[in-house]
Image 1 (tube, rainbow, N blue to C red):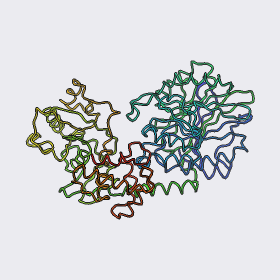
Image 2 (cartoon, helix red, strand yellow):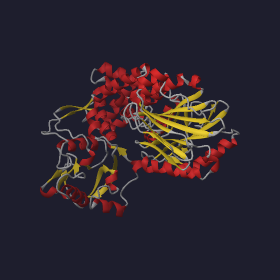
Image 3 (cartoon, one colour):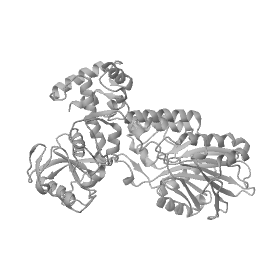
Image 4 (cartoon, rainbow, N blue to C red):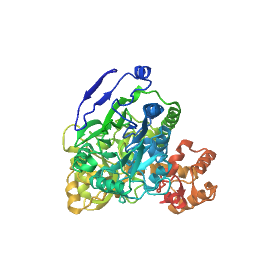
Length: 586
């Protein structure tokens, strides 16, 4: 719909109008001083929520801040309680979070003044200590109604609340937060436990009643897929006490817009990355009937709030600079490209896999399907390879499993992946540079040694391939029959291995230790360097200390500092312990 257009329709047991409002912003401001006024039928104070969901980049936050500010400025005139919410997925996946553990994305919530958040599945991409630190930094209310483990606490040291009671004049509205419990949609981890949303909503409702709070409306936040949203709505529709007070579900997780009736509630999702801004009104008529009204406005209809724009511009500039940081020097390997990874061997891919292999102890061979190398780069030249290049080529997590496979299974699987069809082959298996092939893709050497089809080789590859993705035979059948595929939560991402190799090399250069030194010499050099860098003598290396050391050495770009810490910081807390630092010797 273009500017000035609107669409209206009646739905469900709540007869009020749903508005998809795309009026021209300047006209709206000139005529009404704000884009959406008080609901005509509202009697007394009403509740207005400004909402966005699944925000993975900072770009639209200045406009979201402007929208929140605008509606809050008119709260008194409209006799409204105005709040804001983001129902999950605001820390990851995000390039900034890969760099700083979610610091910038969390700070953005505070800058924008988001009042309520909940867990999305991607918040659990962060390690538990990182996530707890981000929770401590959040200035709003973080609601959690069904994540039972790990146990997270709020800024006050108490467990995250399962619900909150919002005062709306002389009425009360309860809000809660329910996360999907499908573990296939989470990063691999063994400590995460989530109770079923439908089971949890009844438990939470009983807790609200037991608290003595008599509420006039219930506004659940949901981070479920649309099918589960509908099932949740149908479930509560059968619970009369909850259903009559739940006209709307403030939903997230899907990246498309959904505004639809299910059960007795309206599901409302605005899409991802704050391209759209949702406005949800809950109000009561003169005769006490609970009503709802929703609007969706394009973010670009709002101006950018100056202070938030300054913050965003600074963070984006920093990210752009970091993407250009050199993490290694490409050798001259002849024609280097990732343009035909689905058709033929590319020496560039073999080089990248060799870098991955160097951080996999005792691994003989690394192989990966071409479809997981995403850059489609026509040409690389000898010289700097940047962090941005890495993110472009290895765009996905691509969790690497380290397993043992018979040589004959490896050889046949690689051959079949390369000859199975004409044209593009998404599962064309590339191998590291220490693997050599002969006629018919027969293996001649592995790890620089003659290939033995009867030998058990230790290999690193994408866990999904071992689990049957691509149906690469005979590997798929062998892994199934021998229970070879390890759990996903035991596997590291491919970029983690790659960065460990690069950053280990950078550290050894910084401390003047030749990379070819024996492990004992490297260990001694690292121990001595740790003592030198640890100027505060507190047993850990922080960003300030590492930055000072890098600057004094003159041997590396200061923008590399974050990587020098994060690549070996297993706890994810931004501090390198002696044991983490000295692990580079291995």
